[in-house]
Length: 381
Ligand SMILES: Cc1ncc(COP(=O)(O)O)c(C=O)c1O
Image 1 (cartoon, rainbow, N blue to C red):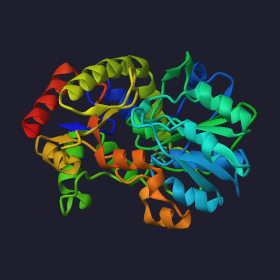
Image 2 (cartoon, rainbow, N blue to C red):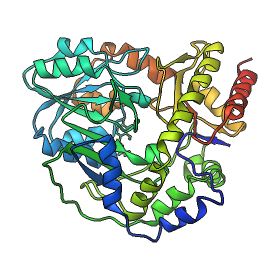
Image 3 (cartoon, helix red, strand yellow):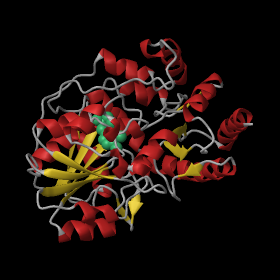
Image 4 (tube, rainbow, N blue to C red):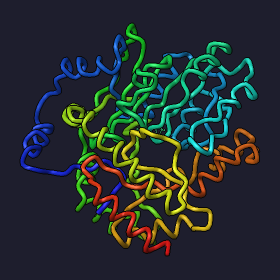
C-alpha cells in the first residue's frame, strides 16, 4: 500500500521512542541546538499549523492592508488570511517546467502598494532565490519563504528558509508529526502563543501514519462515501487564532528529525529513478535534480485523463493525490473578490488539470517504485 502523506514504518528500534513521544516533555534546548544548524542566528517558533505561522509572519512584517505577490498555483487556505488582514493578492502565473513562479511577471505586475512576495518552493524545488532577492531589493519587497514542501533543502549551499525576511514550514507534511508549523524569523523576535493539547483528532492523524489505518480511513472514512477521486484527511486549525504546537507532535518532530538527512538522500536518489521511469511513460516531470518533498509530482501525458488514472491506481492500493487540482485562483469566491481574469494564468490552469502526486516515502526501495511503475504501465496500455 502506498500513500503520499508521511508514514511510519514500525520496527523493534522505533517502537519505544515513538511511544515515549506521548509521555515525555519536549527537550526544547537540544531541538533548538539542532535547528540552529539549519537556521543559524534565527528565532524558531513552533505553531499548530503552517497557516498559523503565515498569520504571525503577516503581523510581524506589518503587512495588514497591503498587496502581496502570490503564486496563482497555491492552495486556497491563504484566502481567509488575506481577508482577515485585508491583503490583496496579486497573482503570478507559474513556470510549466518548475511549477514555481514565473519570475519575469514580478516586474510586469509590480506597483507601489505591493509590499511583499510569497515564495513557496513547490514540491521541494527551490526557486531562483538570487534573482528573486535582487528584485525584492529593487522594489523594497519583504520575502516570505513558504517552505511547507521543503525541509533540509539547500540552495547555493544555504538551507531554504534563510533567504527571506521570514519563512514558514508545515511539519506534518514532511514528518509524521500529526500537526505542527514552524516560523523562522530574525533572532530578535518573540511570539507568545496559547497552548494546544494533543486531541482525539490528532490521534486519528497519528493512526493515519500507519498504512493499515490509512487504508481503512481511505476505504471506509466519511470522505470515501461516493468514491471521490482522492480522499484525504483534511486538517483544520484548532482555532483560527494562531496557537502553539502540541507536545506530542513536537516530540515526534524531534525524533524523526534525527534521521532526516539520511532519509532525504534516499528520497532524492529514488526520486530521480522514479522521474526517469515516468518520463519513459510520457509524463512530464518537475524540472529538478534534488526534489526534497515526500511525494513526487508530475503532469500526466496530455492524452490521459488524470482523474480516471488516480481512481484506477487506487484499485492497486496506490493512493496518489491531485495537489493542487483546485489552486486558489480556481476558488469562485477568490475569482469574484479579486476580479480575476483566468486567461492570465494558462500554466496554472494546465498544471491543475494534469498534476498527479505519487507516493515517495523514505522507507521505500527501488522495488516499490518499480511496482508503482508496472501498475501504471498496465493501466496506460
Ligand atoms: C505551499 C503550502 N503552504 C502552506 C500551507 C499551509 O500549511 P498547513 O496545512 O500546515 O497550514 C500548505 C498546505 O496547506 C501548502 O501546501
